[in-house]
Image 1 (cartoon, rainbow, N blue to C red):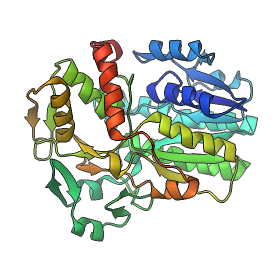
Image 2: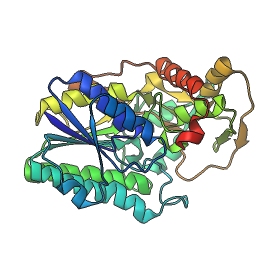
Image 3: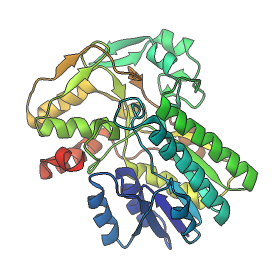
Image 4: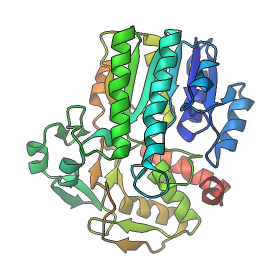
Length: 356
């Protein structure tokens, strides 16, 4: 089996590539990356040391994909992952759309030429912002949690998290819209050209070596910033850091991807699923700060009650449908994820400056 992974020198792409090499026998993995992100050098070296070939290319350029030999599967781990992309002045809206949506078109065209399967790593950010922002929450143990009223009144919401039935109506952010449109295109290409397609809506992916930017992953960013004595702020809501996300290690994601590429075009499986750590790994920023205090000592966190665009109080994905369909569930606990990041932070005390 030949697998092409785009964004292979990013955190998720590299971790998935290395893990799939272990999970699949007789697999030949090729990576494609434009190497534009600081920190890519580390992952390039790790992949090459394991015998994984990495090609320099940009998914926005059709020629960079047309020159490749055919593969059996293409796993898309290339994206601008920031929910503020296109509106924060750091990247233009056109850049965001070209990277996250035009890039999907180019990859799907490659799959069409090859007759290859396509795996899209999507995001929890495809879910509608207004009902999430207006969710009735209460505070318990330093973290927001939906009230019984919110659970009863909101379709697709339960104490286990946000399910695939939750609304994806606009607005979802420009970033969310590019991923939602990519999902639709992938499903349509699969139907029109008989290609196997799997779409995985991921929560926050976290682990050692993640690039030191908040939009790359708040868990790693918070721990590295604490360890490096960099400024931290609780932004929005009550200014106490009660907002909650769940986390998933890419190695757990890779176990599912191995099942998906081996299944081929199994019509019994749902094409689109939440893939996340779920409620068992959910954590607020305040709880994360308590963990860091025990590890590295107490420090002050500033408060900025004014929210940023698209910030939400509680985003935890319900991944029970994936468990039921694939017999899959995360094996790496939140504690192990945090410990892995912390050990890496101790060994790389200037990681944010190097990678961000």
